[in-house]
Length: 263
Image (cartoon, rainbow, N blue to C red; front, side):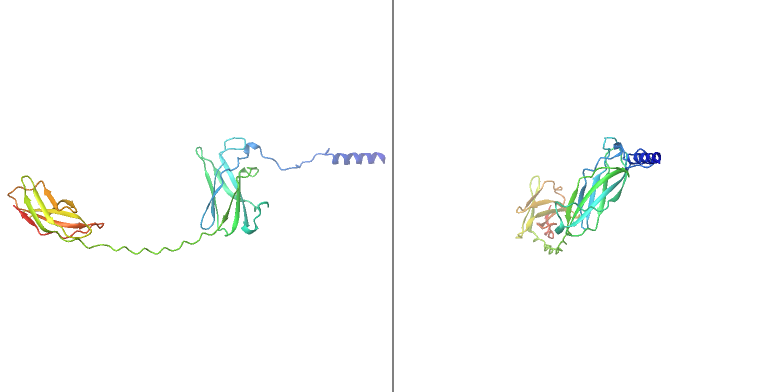
């Protein structure tokens, strides 16, 4: 009887001290650090009319510095607190993470990730952080934390159309008393201008024989003399006329004056 008790006691001792081994494990397996990506450090946001768009850069190295070619996914943590209930010293009530797809990394440059949160509630303070993964056991540390209060953008007041400016379509007065006089090497044309306050200048036209009038040039106000330095030969009959134009854009031009003839 004593021998049996001693045997049972020894067996119990082995169980209590871990002397007997089993086929299970005590803790979850741990991923090697070479597979854990570095955390995101540039998580940012842009507010929209209905919510916000989050953006970040894919990490391209592991925590130990090894080059990554692909990220499995991201775990996005989100919290929402009414502004009146926010407490700086209270824990942030993050909900269960949202899985955002990862993808392959480029050989050169970087890849950008984004996620849109909408619609959002006015008067709520939002918190976001992100973790990157190369696998379900290989998750990075937290990214930088971003937070903001979302308010619905106020409607812009409708702008009334500005009254259309009055358009000046009245041409200035037609020049009068147009005269042409030949000199030794040119023909001088002069005239009397009207009294329009917005007069900008005059245009001088020349017609040779039975042809049509052609523009020779312009003279700015207040001058009323034009010199035709290349007149036709003396035996050809020539006619000169002058019009006025104002400061409008485009300018209004008067009808041409009566022609002054020259042989």
